[in-house]
Image (cartoon, rainbow, N blue to C red):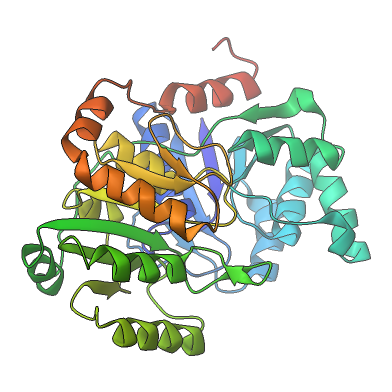
Length: 354
């Protein structure tokens, strides 16, 4: 059996890129031959399974006539690419799976043709994976049949090495009694607010530093800054609070799991989310995690009210004061992982018993 994964592969180490890389490992281990098609040409990976597509329109036409895979599994966020792959699968009699890692669209805000593409995709896809109940509910509101949706979060455990941290990161870690880590794909906003809650983390660091020696590491998974004005504003706030030696930005490509392994706790203060893979990663690694209550979080997460800085502060203080108890609690929780669920999707879609 052959499978095509449509999307980019880590690095950069964003949630979707990491998921695709690990999914490829899982599928290959089960005997499925995998090719990853980076149709947006953004991956910096040297993975042998990766094909970087420089000219997507020409490639789609070429792929229509030359497709060798039995299953197309789409991860890209582009409706055009989703529709193109769905059309190819229908005409060439292949199977297609689409994974929706998030769903921040509002159909009333979409243009006429984009709505047409979305409805075509949702009607004709063989199977759709929603990473959370919230994503599933929105897909159903858009008219997708409930029967073709599988709700499976995107977390798959690491299968290879754990990565090496740069020397400056190791020096920062050694300089503090405790380390809090957080991440975001970039300086993004959602409904006029900092999507990843970076502003809240800086405020928290300023308050926490008055009582505890905690170093904050913030990893930008895309490896570059997309909003320099906001980035400089945040750095100005850090300087005003006098916490330059307590808040470290890491904007180079590295495996976030390597940071988690050196962290005492993880924070996810987003104001919108699908299923945050980094929270699941942290908990799987035994790292206590605080997350906003904006979506369903993995079992074991410590929740705070979204965009409520005081609640975040109180939950963080409680965690620091009782860190050993929280670590023991995580050790008693079952490890969450979805390898068998994903493999069953592949078996089911080809009509095999799973």
